Length: 234
Image (cartoon, rainbow, N blue to C red):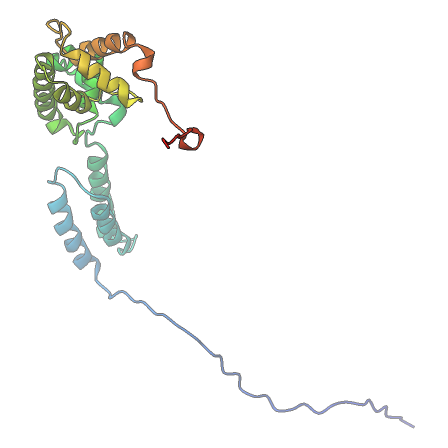
């Protein structure tokens, strides 16, 4: 006789549909352009940039995005990639002088007036160069050297201490203690400056004058009023 074993079970409840809740969904899309159209767009930008003296990083990135939209297995992609690399290479090869090598560059170009300006004069000029580009650096250097020469000449024959102070400031000749600078300016007008020819010699003369100033003439003194004794007449 067969026996049937009963096992206690449960009744499943009907499945309910789960609705996902999307709080925020941003969808961006790029309109489709055929490889031929993209290639023509690339050529338009390439032709306008390849003739420019300077190409910005933003312009390079703009062209890069056009290349990225091309399918890699198309002929247009290969041609654009080749020309894009040429564009980047042109931008990298643009001769720009780094600030730390400006003086060496000008000396290597045998800029005679720059070389003869002396160490202090060369530093004064390079600190004021606004454009380190090869195309204009020579012209700007000559202009700054003219200004430097005029100021050194004016300082050489200056007989007014206040005017000496102004010129020293423009020539970057200064001391931490303002009293020293004023003492130097006052004594400068009575010195023999006939041999001054460049900014290095100005610095040498100024330092020589400063060494002769008595310490008591430049010592800063501070008076504490709380320690003063006041007396009144009765």
